[in-house]
Image 1 (cartoon, rainbow, N blue to C red):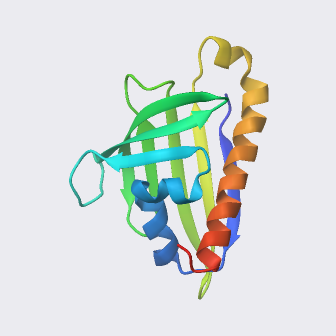
Image 2: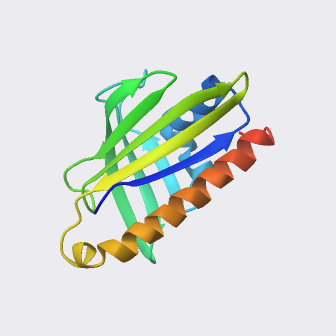
Length: 148
């Protein structure tokens, strides 16, 4: 499946936004499908850090272990699903300063689906894009209201 890229403007500082994006345990607060996330490696967060998450997609519970594979504090973090997860997935989140307290936040999701997922790639691409956009709009609402 070709990468899915979504961007949204958020009126908060880069440090505030990145602190939320970097901490997987905050994911259930802004990612609607997420029911839990827990770091399985000790802090600080960096390349090699891992966490486990439980989410619901298309009515199925999906458990995934992710590892941080690239980390530029305050700017970007890349996570990759580990062996034994539902399917290979790489997620890169970036924060770009656009003003004193205004940032563009982008997420790129790349995967290499197999079986049914490969056949359904065009439909899944659209669904993933809508889901990510919905999640980032929620993140914006929570951050701009001060709830996160």
